[in-house]
Length: 475
Image 1 (tube, rainbow, N blue to C red):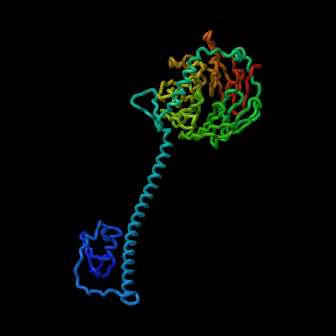
Image 2 (cartoon, one colour; image 1 turned 30 degrees about the vertical axis):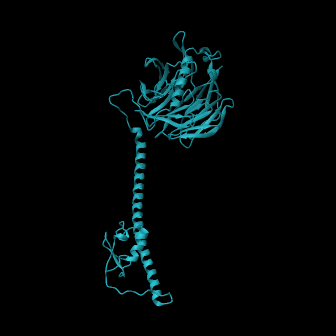
Image 3 (cartoon, rainbow, N blue to C red; image 1 turned 60 degrees about the vertical axis):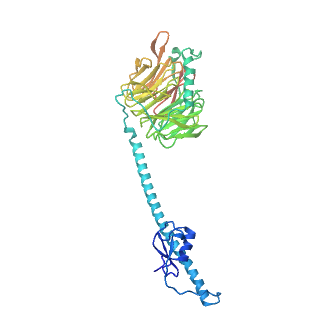
């Protein structure tokens, strides 16, 4: 018989009732006192589970002091027993550690594989998002679907409702300002000056609230701030290396969208927020009348609302078509987005529900809500005519043909004048509330990619193909 721990013949052999292994009594009792388990099977074991085996043995004399050889041998024996027990315990721990390390390495390798697969699937999903069409049953009104967001917060909903209530009450009774331009004054408009400093390949123009600064977006990722008084670009903002697709002012904040899907907000010459929620080009941006909500649309078929009070994404909604233009109703309760499918899609700002769709003749190039709250002007890509829609009737009530392609349309504050711009020139149409008739007080050959009304509509700023600003004023 050999001890299962030391591998030697035991002097006082005992056997485990549970495992049947033979041990040296002093070794196994020491192990049980420390661990409470069987050294071989790792089962729970107590000294009561040990059975002493009777064997013939010679009674060893009690060892004298360490000065004798038997005493030294006894000490060596005790040290050897302790070393054997420690060595056995270390071998067990080494085996267990190897198993744990092997399991950890396997789990790490599996986790790395899962992360790589999920990253690849995410990238593929983003790339394919612009090719996904959303259908639900037999619906024909361009159903919208929210993406991974709970919708507008209760604070923003209250803000939207308050803004609508405040603006809708006064809109009908709002008088035309005394110093506002008239149709006769527009008849005398002519180019007064052209800026000397171009904004490289600019395609967007926005006029701030005080009408003393223009925001231009270039193809090199630069956003230029053009000073009306100084007649030059006085500040450049960096939107990256991608092309700037649209620009707007929100109070003193400058906002730009890019061809890489980024929406960037600047204030006092520095970037204060940046969003990259679109999978592909962010084609247009718009500001809510409250000034607390920013909207962007993109080729990924979605529109995104941003909460400007916290600079966070408020909601993202997927539609059934890539979107090209955007605008808020003057009361702020509706959001309009034009698509490449030729539809102008109207959405409830609070819920994201599709309120109505207006069918055009081609991909939507430009839209503009009238300040009267009931009309919407739109132009299709490559079209020479502008459609004026009545939101109450969901129908076209007037069509304006300027005999040349249209790139931009914009109503002024009173809702009397509609400016229409294209590479062949600028046209302003006038609607008289008293006679309920349309007229054309201004037609000029200034080539325009984008336009903006000046203070009291007493000037019009036009952006040409070379990125230069031409100002038209009464002569």
